[in-house]
Amino acid sequence: MSSEEVFPVENGKVNPSEERPRGILFIISSPSGGGKGTLIRRALKTVPGLGYSVSWTTRQPRPREVEGVNYHFTSAEEFGRMRAEGEFLEWAVVHGNLYGTARRAVEREIAAGRDIVLEIDVQGAAAVRQTLQNAVSIFILPPSFETLRERLLDRRTEMLDTVALRLRNARYEMECSRDFDYLVLNDKVERAAAQLSAIVYAERARRERQEGLMRRVLATFPLT
Ligand code: 5GP
Image 1 (cartoon, helix red, strand yellow):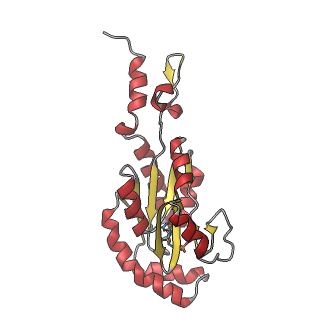
Image 2 (image 1 turned 90 degrees about the horizontal axis):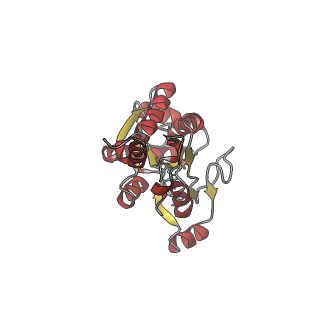
Image 3 (image 1 turned 180 degrees about the vertical axis):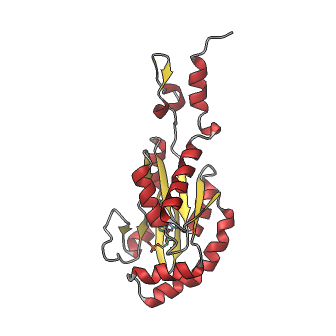
């Protein structure tokens, strides 16, 4: 029996929360300092049924970053082993460190019908789009280069040469935004966060994702 065949119809009514067999994968990218972290945290708080995939990285933790919450921090050796064993859905070298998305965790969540956010760079986004054509990609646009520079310098968690490297890579990352489904301008956090949540809700409502629901509702109608 497929998962689409097990949706309950109680008292002639369909429970819509039972109607989406597979979760949606949301890919969110931006240049470093684009503010995607803040927007994603807001969306996770306000949108029910949205989860986050914690990536693996060989980068050193920043102050206040927590293992298993922000990242799974790991060694280059362990990362290499995971990569060799096919444990990553995608992986990339970003600003000189290795980052990867654990395949099993994402597949488990999606199969359970939960929507998942991947906060990954533009190379990872391209790789996931290749393997999972249904993934929805969103690019967070900083209002200007100057804003990006100020945000990165304000963080004070990075060495100046790291900031310079991230700013050098930002132009190329911005150009990759043309391959994304959505662009969200992060000028005002409130507005941008609302737009991000709206995209999640709109994607959930797409007809092709609701065919199971439609069939079930239709089945409650008498044949004429
Ligand atoms: P940061 O070091 O600032 O946390 O992240 C640097 C860049 O790596 C960001 O663009 C972030 O989105 C990206 N990144 C984080 N996790 C992953 C991942 O699992 N895969 C890829 N490809 N990029 C990632």
